Each structure stands twice: as structure tokens, then as C-alpha cells.
Length: 256
Image (cartoon, rainbow, N blue to C red; front, top):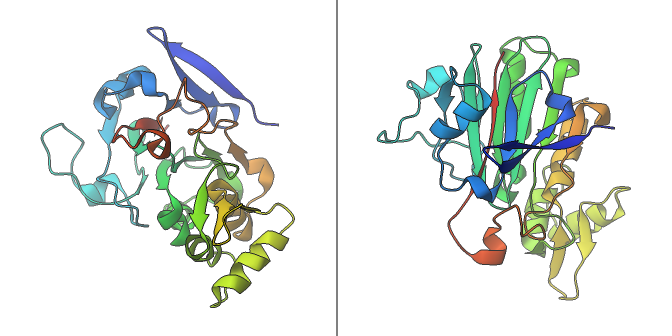
């Protein structure tokens, strides 16, 4: 069983996962707001170069070479929702406030990825896209270690049937919305729960991501999911759905 540890920096709490132990990484809490990845990288690895994107809820995964420059506060950000490193000592960051932050590391190459997987990115398979990019750079499936950070859980994430079907189509190739949602309900570890509202369901995006990853041939032993819901853990995490504020928490990891 993979364990999650609370650590502190200057008295402020952030979360790490035993699965990613060799890599400096952190799922940071709302207490670090509004610090940027430039400051947060100092917590993990002061010498690392820093990369982030302008997140757009898509499935574009880029490398530092493709971005062209390290992050600084004044630059125009490149659009995308996933970053895969190419060299050691590159820190990659994603922001989230209910969406799933996914950190991936390769035992073979030391490379890492940071992915922002909301329902739209999950519907368009952003985590498999990031994994494909890591494989193209020399990793093998069995080398990968994948940790999904705090996000809104299925118990409280109410969505329309249409959204559930759009996300579900990534694992159940069917055209009919109702057929997809019905098939999702029947899965052994279903990513959907019923909702009192007739046209709505509760959706667990992290479960869908897990199923996508398993479909690639990656085992559950290679995946860890944080036991925290952003919506319900008010003392540690912002939730856009709870507060409707444009605040985020950052998750980052440094290649070795």
C-alpha cells in the first residue's frame, strides 16, 4: 500500500507520496497561495529549472524544449495541460482547484511529468498522452509510477449525464450517452454514483483516469490516489466548486 505523508516547509503543510519517494515532489495546499512555482521549486530543489503552462483543459502535453524557455513571471505562457521533462533537474508544475493533479515518474530514465486532468482533459485522455510521450523518450510502462493528488471525489462531484458520458467514452467506446452511463454503473469499481437529480450523476474523475491507465497495461501497484477530497477537506485545499474563487494549489515534481 502506498502511503501519503504530510510534510511542512516554514510551518506550511504539503503532501508527498511514498510511490514517488526518489523524486523531490509535492502536492501543495492552499496555505502556499499565492506563491508561484518559482518560489515553490525552492522547497523541492532550489537549483532546478522551472516550467509551467497556461492550462486550458485540453490534452496537449509538452516538453521544456517545445516550450522554449523556463518560467518567469513576465513571460507569455504556452498553452497546454501536461509537461514531460527531458533533462535532470527540471521542475514541472500544474495548478488545480478540484481537477486532478497527476505526477508521473520513470524509474528507468528519471524523467517526470506533471498533468492537469479535469473532466475535459480526462475525456480527451491527457494522462495516456503524457505516458505516450514518456515512452517516446525512453521509458517503459513497467517503469512508471503515477500519483494522483487531492481532487474532488465522486461522492460530491455532481455532473450532467452528458459530461459523464463524454468522460466515460474514453473507456467505453459507444455513441449512445445512456448506454455509456449504464455501462459505467456496471463496472466493478464504478466511477459513477447515482444522484437524487434524474439527469445528473456523481462522477469520480480519478477512477476514470485509473481505468485509462490500466487499459494501457499498467498495474494498480504503480498507481496511488491521495485520500483527500478538495471539496470536503476545507482546512487544506481550495475547491472551485465550493468557493467559486480563482485560487489554486500547485503540484510539482523534479526530474533526477
